[in-house]
Length: 98
Image 1: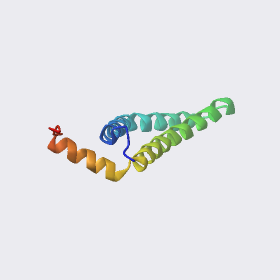
Image 2: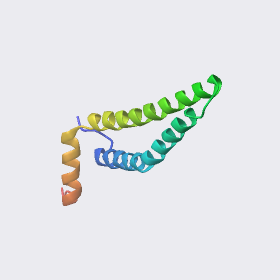
Image 3: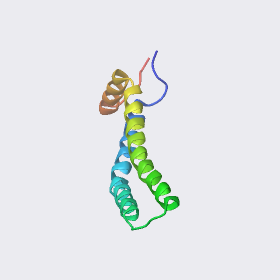
Image 4: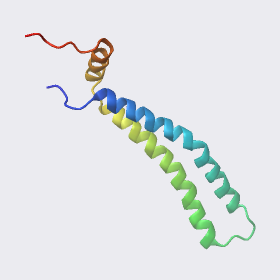
């Protein structure tokens, strides 16, 4: 049974999401580095240190989650439908005269 949604459009949009993630990754890592710098402040009380530790782990988790979701979406795109749709778009669709 053919799919009713565009595999190409899904694939292209996931590529755009990945590009956006790649563009913000340096900022995320800078945030993580700053949080580590914050943790290095002498005599930092636990009520400041603990949320900072949580913040660094959330940055790490976010990075991993988004990567995982991108891969999961790509894995769910039927490869044969994607190739077939790409070929159809490449050659254009011809209308039947019948």
